[in-house]
Image (cartoon, rainbow, N blue to C red; front, side, top):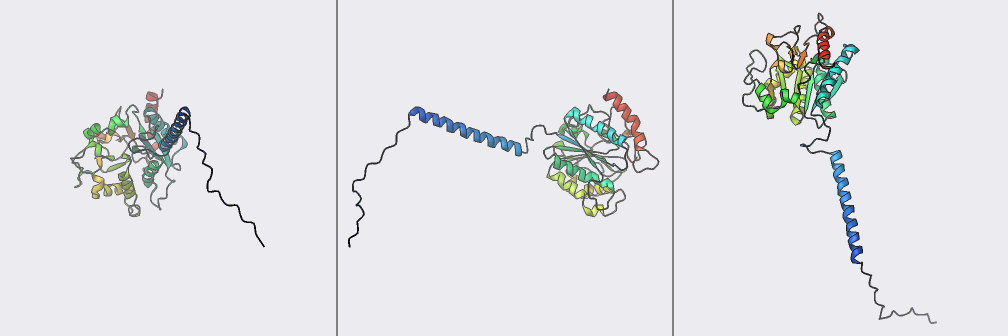
Length: 314
């Protein structure tokens, strides 16, 4: 039986067809399209980068330089009192392009510590919400900003101005602490600004600069060991301990005169005549009004609020 054999391949295959060459005009047209496509892709990548990230030196547009942090005791303050405090802070922030952050004493787990400790996590909370802002001004709810024409930058924060205000080689805790503020610090190296009255450091009005150091400081101050230690003045005495015995904190601290951002009204304790509020001062504070049964914070604020409103809101 014979089977059919497959056909033999030719030893002379047909020549390959040459592709037609693109014309010069067509080639240039494709090059232009490719360049436009590449430029579009690069532009989209750049815009997405700017939208979802920012360099440390260039915060996103619209970022407030300063955030004013106020902790409200909604169980102990009337609605009217709270609204007045908010009006005061919002008015000041709007004048200078700042932001405000209001929170509550019940917003944080204090593990049984007094509610006054809430001022520390409130600043940490604000830093999380405003990661690109530079400064955080923690101001007690028992205070009013009386001179809103003063921006924090020109009044306190610019390095030259801050250096002129800094109390150098001064006992950190009055009247005679052996630990003193450094005399060689420069204004641009400061990350924490505090005042003191005749007896203690004042945590009711302070400014901290955003950064790793600020987070370290706040976390150290809020350490559970301090919260459970039962300091007589709670977070106030804890602050004095941290500042005095941790050189890392002292090297970033500036003390400024009390009336610069923490002038007392006449009923506040631990007062000196030079530290009492005077016309055109930046802030008046009703220190201790919330813990003294003989005092009434809302009544003390009333006259100052009316003066502020008649001067700046009409």
